[in-house]
Image 1: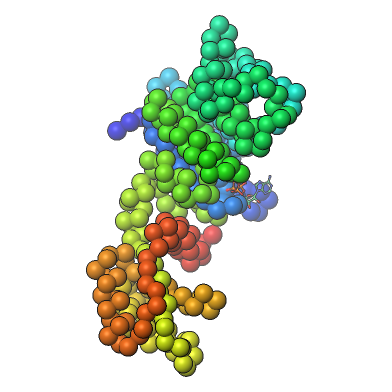
Image 2 (image 1 turned 90 degrees about the vertical axis):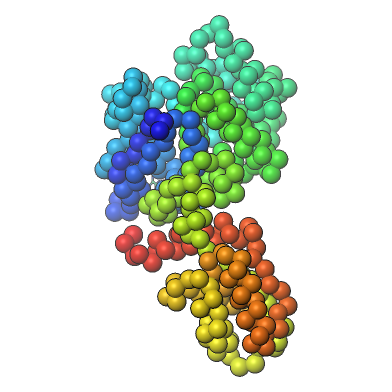
Length: 335
Ligand SMILES: Nc1ncnc2c1ncn2[C@@H]1O[C@H](COP(=O)(O)OP(=O)(O)OP(=O)(O)O)[C@@H](O)[C@H]1O
Ligand SMILES: [Mg+2]
């Protein structure tokens, strides 16, 4: 197995009495892309700020590999340990009158990149993000997305081995998001290690080797996407009935539960059927197995239900996984 480059141990941050990050354990290995997924306010930025030594943990520690061993990050050794990491935690503010070339040269010098290679390096990173032709244009004329892309490459200008990006795709249009996605995949191809946060499930699932899901400051899952899906198993059937619903909806749902739940492949206490009053769509939580899906449809028809629509939305699978995991965490009630 590849070396651990970064380890978070019981990492904890409180603001007053509020736990923004609570006991996070996580390892990032050489050459992998780890996605850090969580809804707004989950604790992603706070965690990354502790990794950059911008915030002090209240408990736990950040360990970073240097000279062949994992070392605890402190004020004393921060320059030495963080030297080989590129951070984008907040999109930097750029003075409008400067050009990408000027700003990137400035960052490269600041980070001690060999002077004679700086011009070449600036061209390389601008090329990587598809902005070489903008090298000498004033940033003041750039769109928000273009500025963001300059921010992203400013994090890697000194060619660090580890790259930590906080929501690099937020606010970008689909084309720019794809460019950033390809940029991240290329970093991995060139042997780099990437830790990347997002609340966009799709963006994370497209690039990450492993996904860490954070919710209310706690890590609730950390695995490959396949394993996460396997563990969460579940999927959701959507269907609409043609029959007018006589009687109250509670009664209908209870009747449906009696005939459907035994076919969902999910225990009675874990299973659920929802009805959305606006869309008139029923949702059935099931084990995701096509056999169960067909069996449920057949049983509905046999029981005289006329089905108008019956589907298992694909995009809904990842979405329901995310919702399911965060919901379970809330149920535990130990937040
Ligand atoms: N300096 C601070 N003082 C008080 N509370 C804070 C501070 N910084 C963050 N928080 C709180 O900590 C929680 C986690 O915030 P954080 O910014 O880490 O979330 P996030 O996962 O990055 O969210 P987003 O997706 O919105 O960027 C939030 O509830 C936030 O309000
Ligand atoms: Mg954030």
